[in-house]
Length: 180
Ligand SMILES: [Zn+2]
Image 1 (cartoon, rainbow, N blue to C red):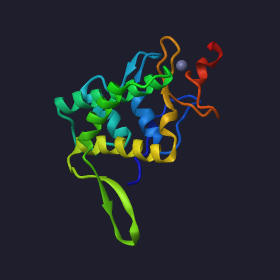
Image 2: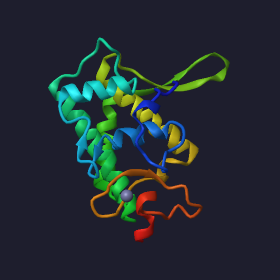
Image 3: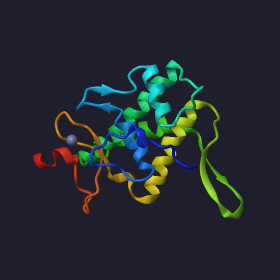
């Protein structure tokens, strides 16, 4: 599965995550404490963002319950990223993320020439959105980049940033490094 182009929705400063992880970063950063913006606040705003991120076809929509599920998915992603910046394992956040990602109904498809891909067993819009996020996380984990996505621990920030330091020990985005 080739990832959606999310370059149009990037707002990550100098902390842009590489490859498919950037989709997860963009999704997490639809909620910004810095600019007091929530790009998914209403169902209409969420649909607009999802279309910009190429996660939702032009003719497709979201139900209210799907919108609520989308917000829970983002919350669970952000909780996992926040736990990393806090230097702790958060089993409950991980469990909530696992539960939210289950909506994507990921399966492994085997093709000719020994090709194997992650795909969604669902055809409906919302499971496909979740599947895109789940595939991005799985591919990032395989590439070793997933543990480096964190939310900035500086007060009032919370930006999802990519920790590119050799030690993988950064807990603040590039805007707040000097405050350590
Ligand atoms: Zn920050």
